[in-house]
Image (tube, rainbow, N blue to C red; front, side, top):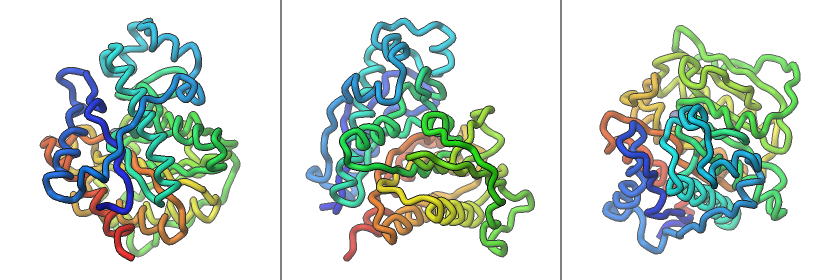
Length: 331
Ligand SMILES: [Zn+2]
């Protein structure tokens, strides 16, 4: 039995037809976790859909109304890049409910996973980049509304910048001294990453992403690390370490929301970084170790993953559970 819960439903499947987003990945992760003995049936808990009230903590009434009545414009549907259906709306409401439950469980157990979610490109008034509803933001706002937390930090390691997260939790941008370079001697790339910082409100947002990738317009997170193409494991881990240290020097979150995208993988179809499966697991371990050392509960969501072989995406996501078990499992 794991020392943390895995929130999961077969209904996380996104009914989007043939698509670069492998909508069946959630079911495959669930199956793999059970088959390998990494998790048992008792480790899983089933989510309920978020209520409309929960969704409205983040999204505008007009947008929610359009989703519920099927009245998005053709342009809005195109921007979302997944085909609208009432079933798809239900899947996103359920994913948001899953993140609410995972956040709640993380506050009780120190860690929890939503085996789904991480839809970080959804904005209050529109969806984009395969994301309709920002489940992580909904979960944070719901925890705050219930007086369970005051502050949270998002750590987004998907290859694409968390533009929805940045927009939703936009703080006041203030001039700040440049952050120290990430460990100097450990950075080996010839074109270094750029780090930008802005002040946060009650939610501090960190995003590490490939600079030359979607989204073209990257609204400022509290800390953005704009990584050059083809960056490998060691440099990536050094920048992540740096961003976490910088963020946690500036801000004390009561919940850390880790968006564990599988798409920084070297064989990802939509990513241009060069991380290995082992490097991605070290990334997960680093986030968990830092959170555990500071006693910050962690809620994990999965976000993107478009490896040429879906099996690799499944492995990377399952390894995040392995990493958590290594960090949180032992006494
Ligand atoms: Zn992505």
